[in-house]
Length: 159
Image 1: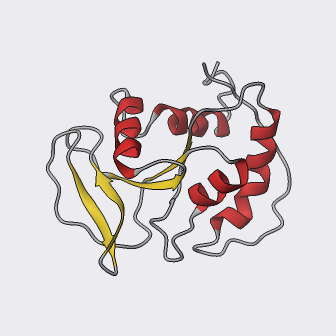
Image 2: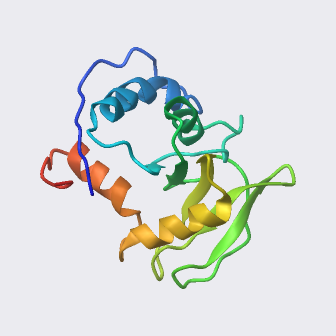
Image 3: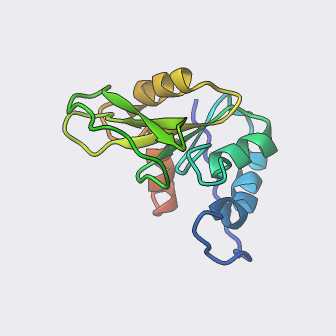
């Protein structure tokens, strides 16, 4: 089941790299509170613990909503990884200061990887599983792909 809620409002926090959750979380939480069904899992286009402070927007939202969250970002905020294979499903650990903070994951043959990290109430292996399960032939998982479409004005994308 897919639920869609669109919230418009002003953003009071300035853009500061690494502090995305303080800028975007209030409106995201408002949208989540309007949903008729509580999600079992939330995908966030951003970082979980793969963040310099180990507390990106996916971790922040998961904690505030008390829902399992996965950070699935299109770019890397911190950490390094080895070269990964070209096939869908290939991944390499993303590490920072000798700590595994996520993975670089190729979700589709030959595309750029996404960066998966745990947000809240989920393990890394399970997060990788759900990202791959929800990609459905695209680079991004269906929930974040549909959210991008709705945010771009396609209000019928999630229904």
